Length: 480
Image (cartoon, rainbow, N blue to C red; front, side):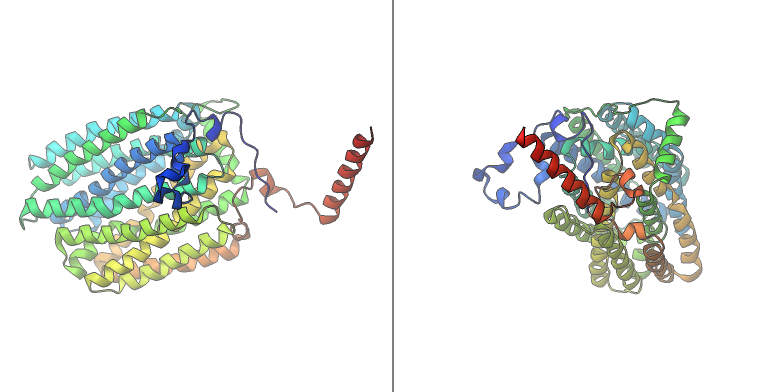
């Protein structure tokens, strides 16, 4: 039996400052009513603004990934250079995420997000100017990655922790699925836009920086849209911490909290596996596109877009499903499907086949991520959400542990063999984790609290006895 955690005072949709917009539920809205379940979280005014702001930020990140990857590989011809660029972005996330989690639990989350996107505007404009003047080097991209990664480490925990405060517990699964949908919509449109724009401006010149520079100016504009929409939130996501320690004390409290819960630790292990073995495929797509498919800049945009289409379909299906049971088995299954289609993709040689297989990779990976993040949000206490989500995010800083070996394997054995090895590792370790950590398989709705995951389930006879006592007491009260 699953017991729901009581709402924390001041937390949830009713206390969020963003009332539910009942216009979304009126019959006059035609087809929208038919999809009310799929888009239920958008009934919250603040969630609509948050969703739009995140969509703009995701557009910026996806366009940056294509433009950066294409230009770096054109400049260096090296998979290792792409790997080091990712390291520059991920390392600050690993170093600063815990601090970002404490910041999210202490300060108003809305303004943490706004400040982060404002700083991204400044940094992106500077890099765009360097690129368009033709003076850019790999060092510039690495420095930009360090700054960008640090900003994300401070703002992402706040972005994740504010969602359950706005929509409440019951709508959280739908909200996380729609948040993933915004990311995946950007994965479809943004890479294709960036790739086509670079191809048109470059005119076949692989070393042209004009198109990439223009793309980075557009990226800065996307960050500006994000700032405007996030600033419009009514709910500011203030601190819900019951006790404030030193910065180090608050960070250690978050780590101890996670270590005490088998469910949270199991979810963390399940996060590590695809980060190291599955996610590097996205970074290495420029190499696969060039060496196997010879697709050019437009082809690279199509590959990212194909993965995004599958991911968008997956996130919308999850949103339409609503809250599901047996989330642990769904989580394991999604990771295994991810591994299977990644392995088949590694062996593909035609663009149409690569696009189809990447769509299934995107679908499985987005289902896994949405489930993982939703369960993590549900099982933690509100005052710990920022720190716990920061530790989960910090695990993304371990991606270089997979990307750098993948880079060396790519240069030694070829991109196809490297991706195949990664897919095998993803599948095998997922099965090992599922068998070795039973807490993952036992995850049902995800509403279990830390205390419930530690306490034994009451024996049936005890429950019956307690029920009999309760009935007897009620009878006495009624007689009186």
